[in-house]
Length: 304
Ligand SMILES: [Fe+2]
Image (tube, rainbow, N blue to C red; front, side, top):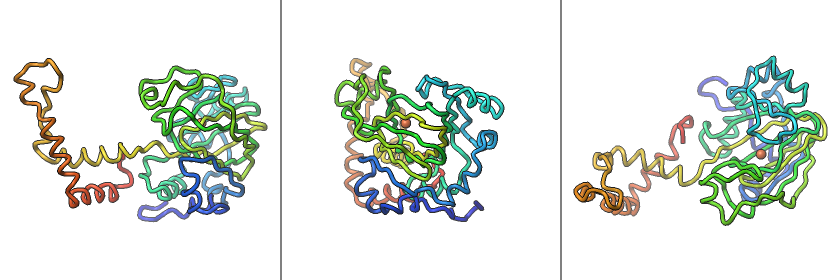
């Protein structure tokens, strides 16, 4: 894609059988969606031939081999073009990370209204009977099946909404997951609410946090479009950080924060004053408008 040109691919076409409006109002972040006839010729053309060596060379994030039977995204080893072919032949799933498919990535990011840096196009090549064990992801995931049939078991997550991290059933939850959870995370497999056999050309949307596991009924090649977690809290804090650090008094060195610290350091704690100033700032329509503008006009390649 030449600089200054928009993508020719339109992600909207993936949702043509249900419509974009209905997708956002009924399914986004809340319901699983299984659609037929989602893989447009434009998308298939950009992905190109399903050739392991070629895909390895086009994966900006490298290629991983998931060991057969491990069912765990953590039991993986990095592979090159040569070892990837060998690993696939002995039953490993290949995970091509951050594939060079720029038009599709830009179209997907524009569709969602998020920075390009927050989306990634990945590809899985899974031998027959390969797959993943029960887990949930911190990303919003769209899977377009390219070849073969993959069975998905899916269940809502009763313990945590919008998880900040991925989690594998039975693993010890991290402190940040435990903090967001309404109760202990389950350790026994959930009862699936949906079982989907995903066939070539079809799309499956699994909202962030939903439990799922998969098994390839035949050799499978699946395209994964994922939107990394971009929490409202992150958007606002990062934009506020930029604004506040342009003000001299907000850049001062913070001290006296802890109970029991030196009383003179304590006397220099400006936290109550600055929090009051922040509250006033957020009641000022002009400053709120500036903040919104800063977020909405941010460069699409920015970290946020
Ligand atoms: Fe997953």
